[in-house]
Amino acid sequence: MKKTAKEIVIANTARACKKCKLLTPLFMLIAGVILVLIYFFAQFKNNGKRYITICLCFVFFFMSSSFSFPGDDASENTYITSSIESLSTVKDIAIEDEDSDADSSSEEWIEDLDIKDSDFEKMLSNTDDIETFTLDDFVSLSDMNKSDSNNGESSFDKDAWNLILVNKTHPIPDDYDVPLATISGSMKCDERVRDILVEMLSDASKEGVGLIVCSPYRDYKLQETLFNRKINLYMSKGYSYVDAYKITSQKVTVPGASEHQIGLAFDIVTPGHTTLDYEFADTYAGKWLKENSKKYGFILRYPRGKEYITGIEFEPWHFRYVGTEAATYIMDNEITLEEFIEELE
Image (cartoon, rainbow, N blue to C red; front, side):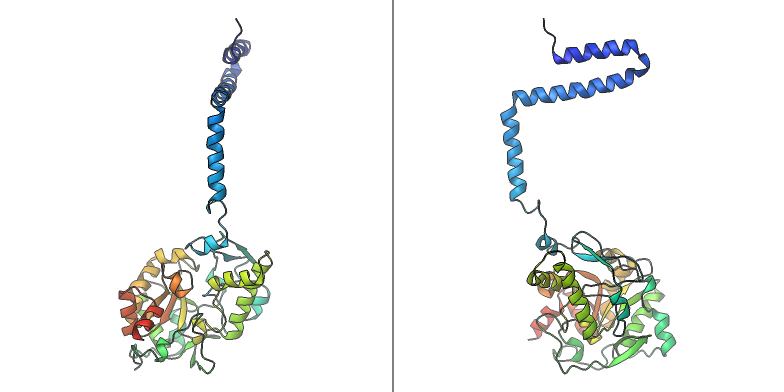
């Protein structure tokens, strides 16, 4: 009677084991693999049509599903798989989204950037070698003058300076004048919020929370440079100008529409977490800011889940001054500045 393939394998394995007992484990392993293959082959032979049908169904599903080709449009609608830069060196750093780290007179480093971009790369922004400032920098420049957090403004007057709405549909007025005050070196901010920011940093320090401000005011020229560089980056990957512009506007605010240009917005990190990424929201400093910033007139400007309103991805490090009354209302009601202004109107 003709032996089956299974019986042949077992017989040959037994014969080989008798000849060389030292290699018995290896022969048994090989035999096991062969027997498994024989089993699956036999199953497929007897049920071939069924397996082929199942495979074709899976292929059709993945080919017609957005999961198989998660392009830029898919990544723009998620919180974490967004297209952001990874820098070649810490020194040559530039955060090319809404909260790019830069100041009005720092343009030399822009020319030396070696930017690498991938849809699934995380933004790396180590602040060790970029210009940042902490509470000590403030105190060394002037005495801490604890003024009223509202500086006398009417917090619920939509025309008040602290409530100016700046976004893609509300660009900065041509005649808008920013009263700048020096923070440290060439870094500046609106002089009306400087002491308030000092107060928040000081109180946080007393509670064991170290805060570092790494991106305050920047001018139009620098914002334009960052925006155009991002467009060129996408066009070099084969995108048309229109598509590159569309994607870029989700990552980098259009020049003339950035809150950093009015000196009221600040990117804030902590010594233990110096990258501007989504994980900052889970740090002790990130949680402290979200909970306490309203006491000093600051709001989390681009909260999670509100991207369809702000037009900007979730940025747990970006805080904007609006005054204590407005900030308390906005944060307590979990709304955006856009929604708050709409209520006032």
